[in-house]
Image 1 (spheres, helix red, strand yellow):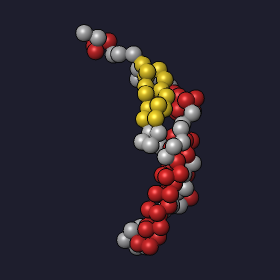
Image 2: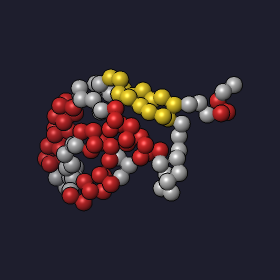
Image 3: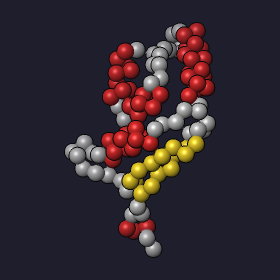
Image 4: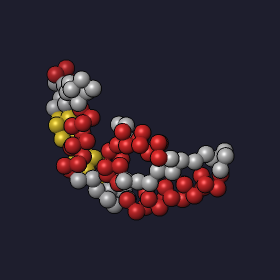
Amino acid sequence: AAAVEAALRASALRFLFDAADPPVVACSALKSPARATRAVDLARRVADAHATKRVPTGRLNSWLDDLKRGPGGERFGGIRYASQVATDPPRFLAFGKLAPDARQ
């Protein structure tokens, strides 16, 4: 489970840990169905506990800046910044510029 968590924290999904710091449970529904059932129950409790939490705008935009930066340092995307506008379900609003070919 520790290796799975480390890989997730290093991946593009790391923003999930920045936002909520969820527990990571590695299990197999085939080999240990009882543990898988407990993992699903834990996931529901975590989801309920975080349903009304907001991602701070600064943290969201820091993640967005990382996402827009390519592996060679190049910049991608026309999104300038984003903000969370609602919870349960979470909704985000992104602000940016139109692509030149979209302005007709």
